[in-house]
Every structure is written in C-alpha cells, then in structure tokens.
Amino acid sequence: MLANGVSHITSHDFLLIIVTITLIVISVTMVYLAYSQKINEKLEEKNKKKNAYNEMIELKELSKKLENISPTNNANLTKYEEEQEERAIISYDELLKNKNNVSIGYESTELKDDIEVKKIDLDSTGEIELDPIKRKNNSKVTLVSYEHEEEFLKSLKELQYLLNK
Image (cartoon, rainbow, N blue to C red; front, side, top):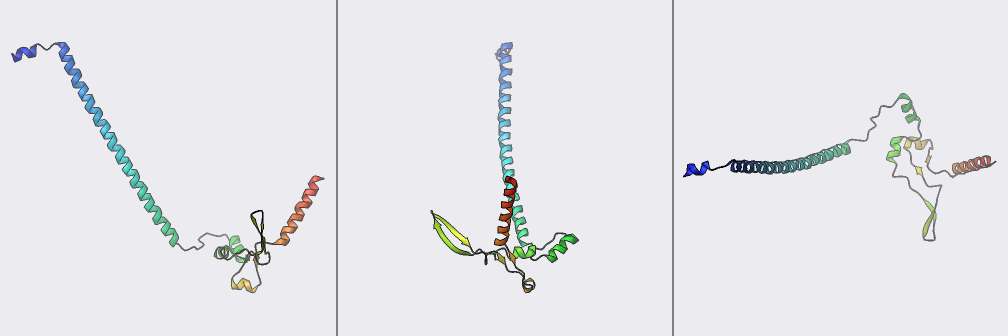
C-alpha cells in the first residue's frame, strides 16, 4: 500500500513540494542574512565606540604632554629676527610673562541712562613693568597714548577736508 501511495504523486504534487522546499530555503537564508547583518552592525558600533574611546585617551595623553612641555622658544629665528628681538624695548617673552600685570585705571565712573561710563586714567593705564635692565634705562611701554590719538584724529580730519574739496 505504501508503494501505491508513493506512486500516486503527480507532477503537480512534485512541483508543490519543490516550491515549498525552495521557499523554506529562501526564508532560512533571509533570516540568516538579517541576523548576520544585525550582528555586523553591533560589531561596527562597538568598534566605533572603542575607537572613539582610544582617540579620547590619546588626546588626553597628548594634552598632558603639551602641558608638561616648558614654553621655550624653539623657533629657528633668522639673524635679522634675533637682532630685532635683542634690540626690542620689550620682547615677546616679556609680554607673555607680563600679560596679566596690565591693568586699566579709571579716573571716574558715571551712570548715564542705565549705562556705566568710566573715564580712563591715561597716566597710569597700560604701562607694563619691564625687566630690571630695561628699567634702568627708564624704558616704559605705554599701551594707550592720548597724544598719538589726537595727532591721528587731526590727520584724519585733514584728510577728510582734502577729500571733500
């Protein structure tokens, strides 16, 4: 009877079995591909986080190294630049050392329409103390000079007058 049952399979039944098996194989393949893609995405995300963490550690190490480096002048100066640095009233290094020593002094403070107006004391503002050798020579670097501003303003007015002729 079993042999009879197998012999009754028609070509239509055989085709149906092959299509069913093919669909099962395709379904299993698609599930496998989707799962492997999901695993790859998780691995890529993990690698990105690991790389970002490693970069952050490298940046921290680099910043610590930069903090520990002494601020020496490692630039290769030309002969002319060395000459200018020696003859300068105040050097770049002195400016860096004294950048916090400059203060602005005010003569008076007024309140006009909710705005605080301060008058700058030009005699004591903007002077940088120099090193002892240059102090002996009575050198001072003045950041604000009222006389030069007046001369400049007069020159601008003359220029404007000449342009308007």
